[in-house]
Amino acid sequence: MTRKIIIDTDPGQDDAVAILLAAASPELEVRALTVVAGNVPLSYTRVNARKVLELAGRTDIPVYVGCDRPMRRKLVTAEHVHGKTGLDGPDLPAPTMAEQSQHGVDYLIDTLRAAPAGTITLCPLGPLTNIAMALVKAPDIAPRIAEIVLMGGAYFDVGNITPAAEFNIYVDPEAADVVLNSGVKITMIPLDVTHRALATKPRLDAIAAIGNRSGNAVSAMLNFSERFDLAKYGWGGAPVHDPNVIAYLLKPELYTGRQINVTVELASELTLGMTVADYWQITKRPRNVFYVRDVDAQGFYDLLTDRLARLP
Ligand code: BDR
Ligand code: CA
Image (cartoon, rainbow, N blue to C red; front, side, top):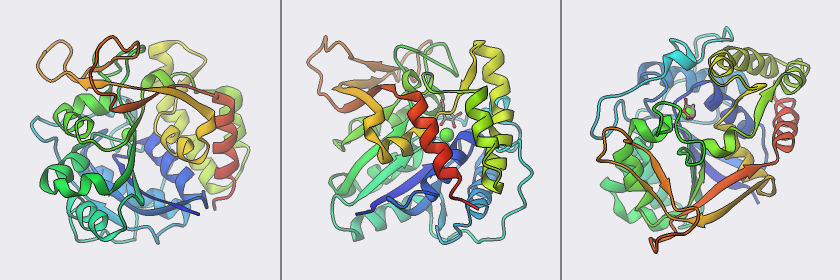
């Protein structure tokens, strides 16, 4: 049986790779992309989402445009990582497919209300604004969501946009707070995991060797986005965060973690957006998150490379 998912995204090279992985995987029925502001402003992410679907030959997947700023704060972006457009690297043509006219938040609400309860999984790959806005506007959708599998947060590897906070959570911490307290089943893929699945040269070479247009585009994307992380961390490769969400759906056996409490810091200027993970279960706070901690990195890259080879 295929699993129905909605990908909420702010592409972003690594978001693009996640979308391609999902688009190539018959186990998943991608109902739609909902787009949010994050890595770059919404004016770019809404275009990038459609460029990636056209690259994958999947213009059957509709794109709904969501929020252009966080719930309570000014948008913080990451052009220093992703380039001006968010998708710098490959030279992809301007998209010709249309956007849907309905707002992304209303699409989420209507779709979750119309589908049988527990049949749609949400896959947020950016700030959680759209998901939280839908939960605030229509709290009745919470018990209808099968699961939220998100890329965000960090604990052992702390921050990448501040010393304490991971980008997606930092950009809209109030939205993260709504999601974490929603009662929905949540799986979190934090930096602690993505930093253990580095795109080393042999892994990038394997993607480049596929030779199709999607493989070539991913190769160009990752070679662009690696530059910042390689200089920053000095590791043998850069993390490719967001596709881990899709890989987790496809092959959960590649990942390990535990059910714990995660709470987001909203008050402190110094640690705003920090995901405080009670990994050692020191408190009695409710265990609201399946916190993924480790990954079979080679298994992840083998899966990604195999699936990209199925695309045009
Ligand atoms: C997350 O932030 C963005 O830069 C990436 O697309 C990913 O979703 C990693 O912190
Ligand atoms: Ca992202």
